[in-house]
Image (cartoon, rainbow over all chains, first blue to last red; front, side, top):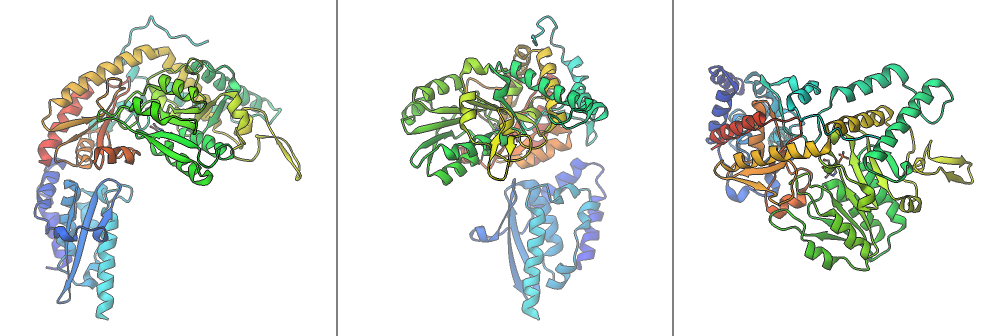
Length: 140
Length: 412
Ligand SMILES: Cc1ncc(COP(=O)(O)O)c(C=O)c1O
């Protein structure tokens, strides 16, 4: 699926919830389906250090597409990581570079992507794009 | 003289009316502010003092002959006098206005560069805030002095037997907080000061946390340096004090050069102003200093005895209630504690708990609390910290407990 379609799907999914608690519960359960990073890849190289929670992201490039696996020590952060990877993983480097994250605002989770939040997510998105950029330049 | 008014009963509902912010809502719920160890809220009297200064007599101090400057100078110096009385300091020139505790500690640490020699020892404790660690590390790096770390036990109390063994003729400085911001432990500073003085060394006590709960008598303590931040005790941000004994303050070189701190300036030589101005270069936080005095008046009118007694009840109640939650562990279980509770729930990251309870209008701090070595000691990434002030209520603790239970249910 294209990134835009996936984002629409997520927005649709979240529109069924009336309050923050249901949104959070859904996000937390999505965290449980996150494609988990292999334990052996949980090294400093793939660690993004937020001040409060940690995020690991591991990229792979196969048949022109980038695949990510990840994990976080905080379950809410992990839920957001799962949402982001649903959008960013299994995509071409160019599509990843073109994608934005405004769908996170639309589903009411905006505060988690604030640069002052110190959960590592803003750095993670930057990192996803860096990986995409690196693979993109391999293609050219 | 300010005297503690012992006749008024402690009425938390009327006290809460003094704090405008306490009636706001957060995420649709009434604010429950339990991050008082980070900064306290401000009563209207303090907010009014700031507005009054800027509305009616804003002027630079110690310089102008004009009326406004005189009024501002008088108000600022009156605040210094209130602070002197509050802390029972002998002379007002032993009180240096700073931007807060961090500034005060750096001032002393920087001054000791000209005093310490290679091989001298500085003792800090495992309980310290980064601002009472890093300046001393920098001092040791630049002088070749050695930084020694006083250990704690599992309860989060200083190992006093170990301390007696660590102090030696090489010890030049001992720096410890009065109360730990991360755990709430009240440290036996009287004993620390005695032992250190017997060894001929100086003591700096970081009182940033303590001053909101305790009224320290600095002469009785016989401490060499004591620091404090106004913003943790109902005053504004960006102002605080360094108390130093005159003999020490005259020994230390100035920290910053500039206006206000000089007697005479020529390009050949500058002579420095007398205490306290020698350490007060530049235009200070005038409104903040004045409002700090008002904050002290406010707290003294309620009375520190009553504040401590009430906060202790809150602490006992919250501790009992929290411990009923299965899997919850409190860090900092010493006998002598103020109203700070650091905790974790087994298998749940503190950040997750903080995020959920915030959604329910509750402000707690999560993370390492600027005390990473202490978190390393317990081998945890951080804790959730609820810290109570005299304007918190038992009902708010009930709200917290309910929210933590809800968070636990959502997160497991
Ligand atoms: C024990 C302790 N020391 C020092 C500080 C630093 O104070 P400030 O940031 O006001 O300079 C704090 C504040 O969190 C503290 O709790």
